[in-house]
Length: 222
Image (cartoon, rainbow, N blue to C red; front, top):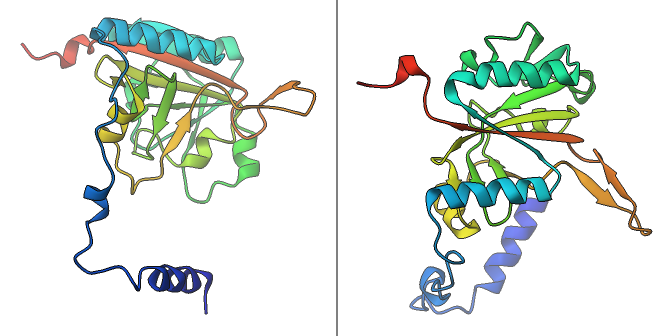
């Protein structure tokens, strides 16, 4: 018997005495909790996101869509990156102004191979203003979870205000729980018993978030 079968067996035994006409779980638990704290405009929500990202020691940049490629190229150059992991669905235009060697996101990539890569560039699924959290869901423009956990430098692009929500409940409304969700609040860090902060333990040591507004001129409909 597998571990899965044991767990499911215990669940069935625990539910054996539950009446068939019992109130469904979706109705039994009240869902009338506060959805967000206060009322904010879209601009205020983006500002709160930027503040909380910075509070978690992420490095925040602002740019327009037409300058995004130059911004990313500048961040890679400043980092001294010679290689970057690229998710399969990432907009090719985002890396149009850099000649850094690109490493494809493949199932065959090992942790050792990814550890030799300097940076990774991804999009995101949603960003939460109240918690300063970026959520990735494994979509083609974000790639496999491992590519954002092993390289030491992560550049994450957030389209504002479209991808920014005020609260965790609002984010959950947009996310598919069946997808591999990664919730990122600042660069990877932990503290030992002496409260000495150590960064880069189980993820990138440096997280740079690019808040990009608008669309490139050639994609704007007339």
